[in-house]
Length: 399
Image (cartoon, rainbow, N blue to C red; front, side):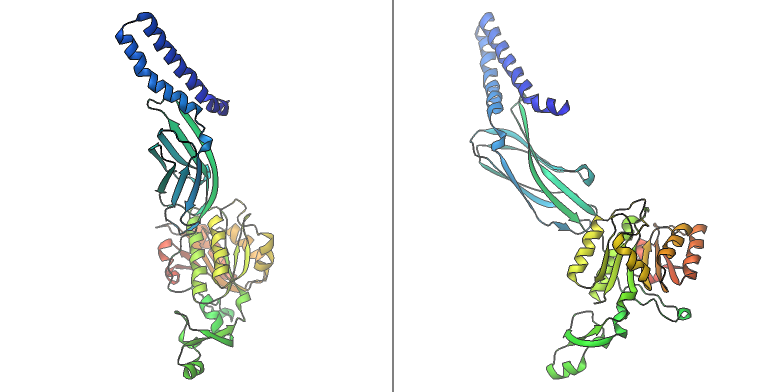
């Protein structure tokens, strides 16, 4: 019923305008006198404009949208330009233009009001408030035309669907978190140190951030230019970054922490696998370059918590079961979650388990008991807050 009333609204307004003009004419006709006819002639132009506006086809108005960036960094606004164009000349007065987005975006959509006049084209540039992580779908443009007093109003929705992705928040890290345990005989090696224990297979151009131990000095002696050794990754298959998809008060911080680690591992040229747990989880065997990093970032931008967050995606079951060393990111620890995770990670021999806490929050007794179970399985458990993402080594140890 509501869509019908919305569609029939201009017709009801037209009937109202005709009634007003007829009433004014009847008053002037039967009352007579200059005053009565003056009232009629004053109302006539506004009534006629409303009638002509009803006849004017808003479908003749076309729109196109130009989005500055389809992938936006976390906390950045959306900048866009909307260009309107029409074929028929008519003095359009009060034109309201509004962006329409899916309600799931939870962002206030901008709108504007202007006098179009006789111009054929109109351009509108806007900027939204900073956007949160996720996919924001712009459905189209809604145009509303009105006369002087609002007697006649016409609306038209122009479908113009575009998707804008806001990437997760990334923190600059001094180094990729690492942990080592002499008792286990094998270290839960950091991403940055994996390739240091590998065999050189070639050389490549030096890139800022490469370690001195990786510089190929014979090539430098021959050419006078710095080159770095390409190393065979012997243990990359043992390294896996795992992000838990269970609901958590700090879920956004967990996603941002995972994105920061992946970005730092690529910057240090360290290949690693990535696995997200949940109904929408996915597995990326190796994240070692811009393309695979972009795929991981886009997935993290869309990743959302689900009640079945600890469940494995089909593609990731084998990755987790075969992994020996991993870095795990989750929210508040529970004994049930740790026990279920260790059952799935049957081959694990060590790694780091990060429990992301809120600002000023400390682990409770249940979390400490769960941490002891993880430590017994070979994990270095750390309780960390967002403030410590840049230096995760400072996170509180669970022993």
